[in-house]
Image (cartoon, rainbow, N blue to C red):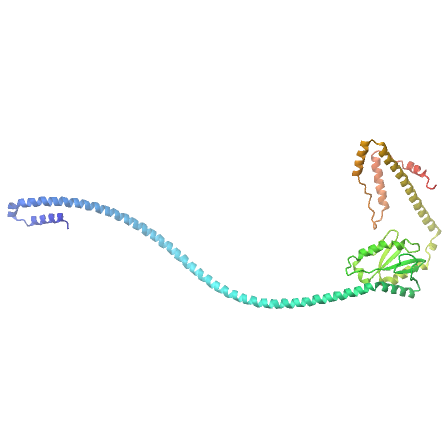
Length: 402
């Protein structure tokens, strides 16, 4: 308790205990104590005001603290709520982690099982692979030996082909009383020659030189072209026969070579007898004797016209060749130098390619007539007259024979 409050309380207690005589005779003391009590009361009032101010500040601080407490409690509730969410998430993560651990354990067990099974299968696979490789090697070796044996047999067949064909030819000639010519009386030395209908028929034996049959058709074509040495000899039949082994027929696509002046036929050794017998049928009759006089006349007339037309064409071509040569000389000698050089420049830039002739393609008379008609139409469209009759008369005036 403060001094001022004690002073005021003592004064009040003194007043309460003061009697009548004390009030009369002791008033001066009371008055003095009253002044002190008043001063103490004023001090108490000041202290009270100060206390009230402090209380107000304390209440203000208390309200601020309460507000802060409420904010902190609100933040604490939010944090508690968020903590609950995080705890729930952590629990979920823990459960998921536990599930993942269990799955990992299961996967490890399965992986170990698969690894063990894989190693077992690898061992089994290696064993199967080794077995397959051994079987494959044996199969390849067997095929190789079989192919070697086949090629050896083919080589032996091809090596003996010439002598085999010769033996067959002699046997056929002996069987059917035909004339086999041991030594041909002309150059070229064919393998086999028969005399049929007063003509020498050539049978050349041809076989592959190596294991590869891809070049055999080209070899036959070259031999067909080389057979011209036989065909150009008088007394030799224009049909030449190339006899090949039967086991080579599968690689041959062309069996007839039409060489214009002669024909070459590719045959196997197995068809020699029926082929020779069919050729022998020529001896059974003379074809020319069976023709009627009228047929012979027509044949001779046509051949004569072809011969005359061929000679006239040669004569006309020679005539025009001389005219073109004279014109070329005139161009060189009569034209001015600068014009002649320009002409040479254009001449060097020109190129004339006549149609290429193919051996297997025949020249159609109808195509020639069509082409000639087109040329005459184009010339007539350009205003050029073609006096065919006059040209024929002029050409006919040229002497064919001197």
